[in-house]
Image 1 (cartoon, each protein chain N blue to C red):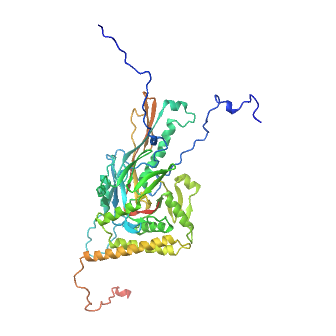
Image 2: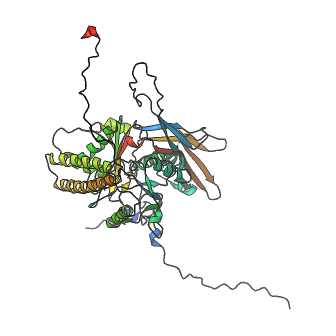
Length: 307
Length: 234
């Protein structure tokens, strides 16, 4: 039996009802939002603001046990020992992101998302991801390697990587940055390992502190997973890495405020607003001055395993 | 006769022949791979490993990303290259591959992606994937070694690699749940490394300037046992 005559049905309310109405919930697009900015294994090399150069020199000195005493014998004059020093240069560069929105889009927006302040806040995450990408760009740069091309990552590769660091006298804390594929393979292999299992999964509190990419610790080494870990061997493999403090560092420069700039300064991140009256367009420009550097090569090892 | 004003003749109907739209430019149709800058390959004397079924250098790369490991604000890698060379890396020039070098630029959704000529970014059902040419890449690595662009590995490096592989094999054999594929792979790697190690030792023996002084000598008298403790402590 059909609907009674003149019954009010949605089919007849085309002039009143919307074709689609936005639901109250707005979800974040799936993306890697892992950041290692505050991890102790990555060294913050200071603020370059007012330093006079875009290039900063990180001095590495051989003190506090680097040179061991010798036994010259009683009455024998000591000879001078050459002081060992080295340096690494960290170059900062401009990183940026721009969004532009029309007056019309802002006016009719019912979701509250097309809001310049929301986009300005989002710049912090974008800057963090840029730093994360730059750090990930170093994991394949260590001269020491663990793992085998074309073979899934295993617990053995993990121990090899950790052993490489121990053999080079690298002090902790150690940190491993792996691609998701490497981590999944490692987990699969871990399940078939006999004996004591030293994997400690991340707790809710740790995730809150360290972000979603923190997966826990194995054998005392923290594990971060990032999709930004690069490929190796013509994309056959992924090249993650494990390193100790002093292997990788980053430097930033705070952008000084100036009169006439309509901007928000969030630490080293500046978000400036530009209005183009002719086009009725508002742009949101995020800017972050940063550079990353491999400070000492032997403090890290690449982990190259099947992609 | 006065000049008459003639209005421009406009056809009653206007039209356009039109052109085939570039449908690949539509949202969702471009490659979703993350953009990245161009690069140069670098090789390190200590980075060797099994690639395919051969013992070959494990290349790394210097990406021309401003702010990354010495690449300056203009994207110039000069400082990064100097720093890498100081650490023992060998830069592989693009000229080793004719017709534009070993990298290619691809347009992706948010810019340009640079990758090697042995990789091709593709999209399958909206998902970013890579189509690879592993044989081509291995041939490239073999060329680098054959031409001496990447020197053959030193025996000391291969000795470390051999020890590491023996340990790997032992660990794999001790596992509660064996992994035949990994074990076979480690065994093959060990064979390759041992063969290369022997060759490297032979090479080194030919190149090494041997010590040509007196070999061994018997001491004229046995080493006297001395007691250097103070008398009161004996």
